[in-house]
Image 1 (spheres, rainbow, N blue to C red):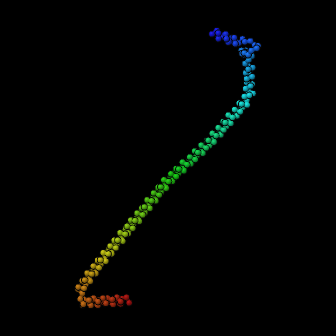
Image 2 (cartoon, rainbow, N blue to C red):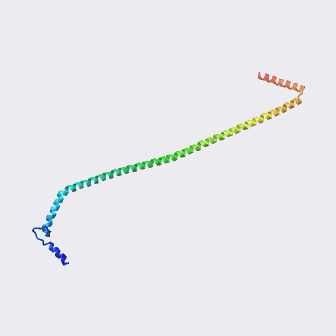
Image 3 (tube, helix red, strand yellow):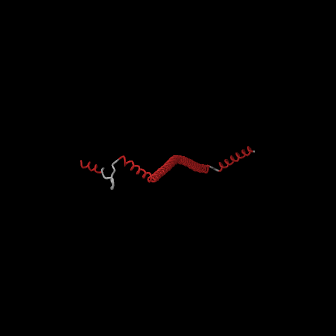
Length: 180
């Protein structure tokens, strides 16, 4: 250990003339060295620091502007999204109401068509019934007429025929007098 401390003491006692060495006198050397170093740094580094400072400030300003534009674009995008969602909800609601309206219209028109078809069916049935009744009436009338003609032909004699004609002529005569 003594050798280490002796070596430091030896460094502190170098001769002053003719060589380069360390000056361990703190009061004499440090303030001068520090002032020279600080002066050189201030003189030469001032431009570098100012340029660097200006570039950093410009970068910060650009970053802030980009950030503000990005925030504005984000707000616009959110507004567009909200508008799109509202429109989609309106379209959806309108679509559902339109579907319901069309469904009701279809149900109503179908029920009207069914009602018309039912009316046509009832009219057709009524027409066919009337036609069938008329056909039955005609047949009954024809049969009754044939039976009456058959009865008349079989029981009608000349004398009865003349009396019937005379009675009918008498009825026509009275009718003629009443109408005049």
